[in-house]
Length: 201
Image 1 (cartoon, rainbow, N blue to C red):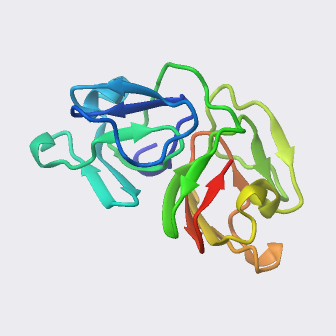
Image 2 (cartoon, rainbow, N blue to C red):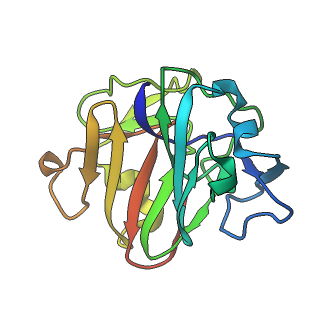
């Protein structure tokens, strides 16, 4: 949609620029795809976005298609989340094998900008009314979002998400009615603040 979007993708690829693959942790069995520019990976929305931002253990990174020579974002990978500012509504299309929900990604202490590579939409209370990729057809109501983060339970402090309704927070120490993050699903990214390193799956 127009404006800022916090996205992720479950196509099990890492599109990278340069001669060396990224040294950051990746999903199990990731497929490395060398591209001449980040724009090559985003060709389906060419000319329709203004900027892409990411974050990993090395800090924040930016890709500006108008200033590629000054951009320090060198890869886009399944398992990670990305901020993308769109000029207009458009569909990002990527091809490849889908990541498996059992694939894992190593998270570092402090903030991690990650994606959701599960196949289903998991939600508490009401079914979300936001858009999802066409193949996200399974909706599962759960009692508590912490159930979906059992792999890192006790090792994270808070999760933050963003969609067309704005920003949302999930704090496992608070009752459900205090939390504004009510779902996780394909196509969206989130920030997870970790207390210690752990593997998310």
